[in-house]
Picture (cartoon, rainbow, N blue to C red):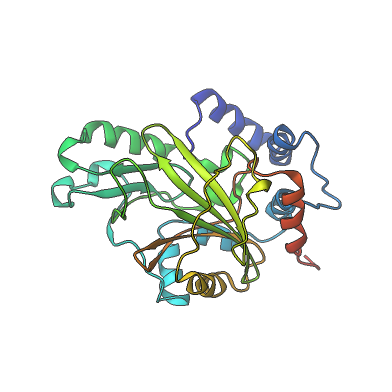
Length: 292
């Protein structure tokens, strides 16, 4: 997970247990410099937070679970590839590193950013990795920003295939589609993500691949114009299949040598990367359910 220090974690946990709506508003206020309009939410983040407290989010818990969601993808869009699963564990000490290939990815299933990328198994410190993983398993990501659906995910560790078509310290392009009831609206491309330096570039496109990166904050914006994938229409088709009947979700896909891989589904994405006009635009595409 985007690891926060111990003080912030336990402070937020205390605030969540005392008043989760207040904690959610605090996170929103910090970025947007205004309080959430609970009576008439307008922008995307307001509406997502409103849904957290006013709707059944059990599906969120199931599909945000990086282990369980694999079964969902196999059922609803079997043509979309999944990274090979090497193992599932409830404790890091259960992992048999000798049986794993040279390269792999270790992650917990219940948060954001709790990922260890192993490019050469012979160079890793197993004791250090196990200590980190078991520490992550003790943390409940849902407390950090009042995202209660994460609290209902049974925690585990999964190890998956390492996907790559790039040089050593740079990851794949990550295509992040905001979808509303099966309709993709925008695609954020995360490129040149440097694991060692914690850097990345962001480019934003509408569904017709027009560059709308001016909506990204300048400090995060890439000047590069990303080439549209040759099988982009197939990516959109997968978006429609995977997110149909879901009011709002972000779907992450990878495109490797023409093969489309599932990344994850995110219902409560981090916020602060775009200008308020863009958040309002996305909010206009998100129709809140009636008669809850």
